[in-house]
Amino acid sequence: MISIPTLEITKLSSNRFRADWTIVFTEGDLSDVSDFFFDIFRSEAPNDAFTKIGFIDGDSAPGMYFTDPDKQILNNQFRYFKIHARHKTDPLNHAWSVVRHVCDDPDGTTSAIIYRNELLLGFFNGEPCTVLLAKVSGQRCSECWDGHTLKPVEFFCKTCFGTGYTGGFHNPIHNVMIHIDPSPKISNIRTENEDQEKMLQAWLSNNPLLKSRDVISSQSENKRYRVIRSDRTQKKHLATVGTMMSKIPVISRQVLTLQEINYNDIEYDVDLLPASIPSTGWGQEGYGEGYFWTEGGV
Image 1: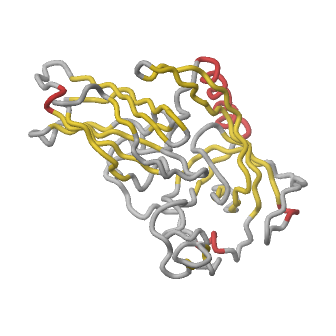
Image 2: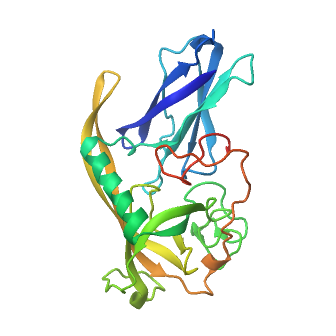
Image 3: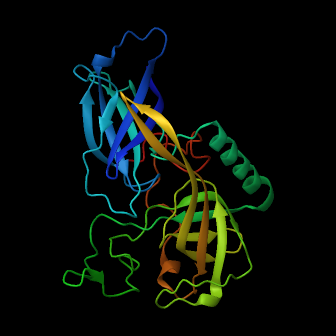
């Protein structure tokens, strides 16, 4: 049987990414790399809506790598990748990689910082939350999207939940440990229709990556918060990509500005149960329990 023990994603430029992975065969397996196809999947969420963007044939591939062809990437759009190896004649001989993001390759110092942050959140001041990642691409809402103004005309639309994209949010990510400061913060951020008195600050580790319009639901208090701003602590280190050296930004912590959502706002209508239950469970490598699928769930 084949396995994919490592997957690394490198940012080559502002909108070009490269995936490099390794494969291992179990003892006694007489298969060769030429017996496999390798499918590359990409999504803007670590647990949902993966789309196949290409494949390589192990018989003719110069190596285990793939360059993302999509050059239309929005500034607020993240990229997650995973690889599926499948035997050309034996459907039982296949394997999935873990899900990786371009910022998932920390050096020793950053790994220690991330580990410390996760200990603090897990044992001291974090609370389990459910995260809803707002869609920033895909099928436009058929109910409220205005093709002339390029904006949703109905904020309380139950088809897109105000995002302008059908479904509004990706499947929820459960049990994300986040510290939410209960003390309101004074903010000079001015956003239309927002109550500045309800601004709060929170922080979490490096995954999942959050952006404005994402939603956090406290599992203990059943309160929901809208992400207004996300500031990330990151450092760069050099990594080799083929014959090139690339400066990879590695995120160790995220500090969030949140707004408590009113109970009558549309975000409270978003279901916190996934739309479909994959046949496989949650993985634990790379993202922590509950953060991504190791296989299936495409």
